[in-house]
Image 1 (cartoon, rainbow, N blue to C red):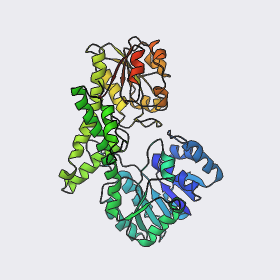
Image 2 (tube, helix red, strand yellow):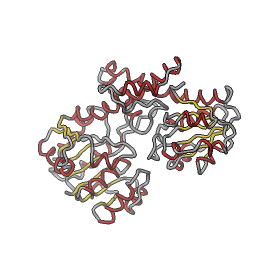
Image 3 (cartoon, one colour):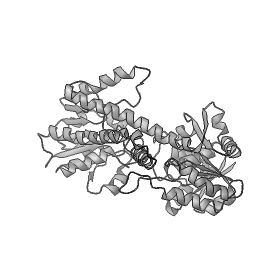
Length: 432
């Protein structure tokens, strides 16, 4: 099939490459000429494991190309995926639909009759119904097909997803999308057929549940800190219950990134508009618990420095919001780094992939080219993004460069016994 992908950010670039992998001819379209030039040269302007090689292969074969013209996309294809961003509005919880509205508004002016437009962006429920009218007026049909990508696993999640959700009013349009996904569906991946509002709610409901589970175990960490209990043992015990499971039950610094925080806030905002804000009022507590873990991490660092961070050297290991990514949006690690700096500490940050983005957005922080250099003469080391490089650090090697052997494990993945045996004062959220 010939298809277009409108928006070539993280979602769009991944989706375009994956569709080429399935055997389709793909045109990726974006208004950012610099980004398009890089993609057309087979370069990915962000870090995602394996994607650069994956994309370059299909650009070289001619199956995947990029441009800036929506009109060209309308002539080229009859199946169009809209993959633009929906960031949080400045000063509000609600989602900013500027890019979604612009993408659909431009696309309907250029599509051929019978075309199928597929919304993949995460939007407030009711958006698809509003857009469908203009799509129908253009002689086309709308389908809503939410994405469920995890950064660090984007290719896998696109080609081998847990499920495919298709929200459609038009049976023919639904079949067109199923044809595009036929190689995936043939492997036995579940397909959930539903209406527009349900399809829109699936993504925000799933993210809300995951955020709830993460913040639940972090709430238990707060109780453990007050009682001397160990949240890691608690999580192991309750995770053996098959009704609960052990995924997303690791207490620590909490979640960040470009999806969970802004999606649950947008969900709260939309629920308020619909008059059902009480149904999701618990999400406000989830958000608050998540933010408290950042403040508590700063507290632990201050406690290790005799009650004051003023004049202390703090090493921050991690800048990305999660490993295998260079995404620093709502990064807990950088939030903590900035908070310690505001309390008078001299902060040095290192991350394997996110240094460039961090330097651009947080220019007041200092950065080091290696973990050991970031930790040189440090009074306290903060482990805040769980890269494998940090998990494999030797306590003895680190002890040779720091000023004081103090470490806070914000991700609960380091071995306390090993670090304490090497003479380190070791603290972790929710652990005695």
